[in-house]
Image (cartoon, rainbow, N blue to C red; front, top):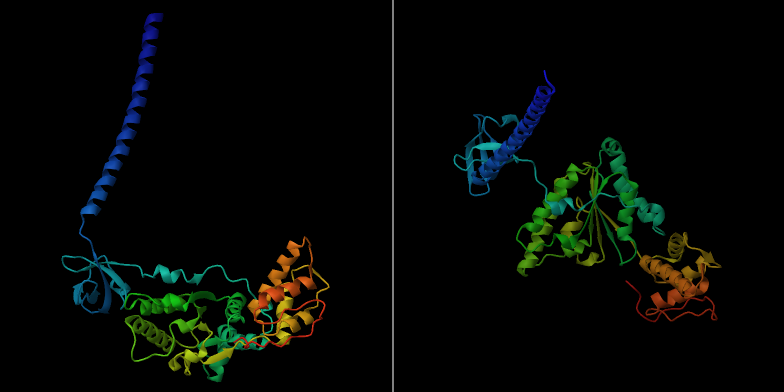
Length: 395
């Protein structure tokens, strides 16, 4: 074979390999485009398919049929598709119905309102009982009512008694009611579900009652759980015969809350904690035995409690010659929130003066600023003799 023939043959082999490679690329592209066409065909079929109707199973009959509550009309007796297992159908199961024959063709997953799911506190509060000052008696009662039944339910079964279902914390604003509830959640391993009662006041009829119902269903699923309803007086005021449509809707929400409190077992690992500033306006039905059995007062802190609260809020502060006993004496009538504000303001006073430690003078200025509207201002020259306020006491 001549060199010319060899060169021609080599070029021919290279060209054949090139064509084979090109053919593979085209085949891969054809497969890709075929998959694209099939995808868009399926999407077109979905867009043109008849929508299914949501329903809820009321009763499962023994002949392969079921009674279903349809969202579009009355109760229906329908057939069950062969793709659906009869043993999986239960009263209350959400199902999808075919529009033509109203046959059950699919079991839908149980739904939870995203609004209700958002009430669950995923990151547990970092507050502990050590962060609460001056409320030892209240902490002890909460531990008996909440922690003991959750951790040792066998004690109550052995004695044959039921622990309280709910705890109501009441007292002036800023005295630590919400802080106590957060401390309970931080000290236990229970799921913490928190909401403000005003969130249950919805503008649509029946919405508030539905949210309450789903809230308790979520608590049962997440048990052991603690449900905190802050400022419960927003929906639990005394019911009147006359009122606007909005007030009647709030009363429906309250009625549903009362029904839920009656409907669960005291030992089913769900505890309810509610807080209020206005115990006097609450509906008596809420306070009867079997609902909020334990009513705990969180009063204004006395001298000893104020000193403990000062110790809690100043334990991380750099202090210079600060007498906590005198601070507790000077802050008579202050709430826990007031004392926290005093400590923060004292820190700002030191920052403004360019110091890295907080002095007694800073605390005096802070007390005058925070409590000045209620009490005659203090000065370092007149000493630390407590002043009696002529204004009405804080309630």
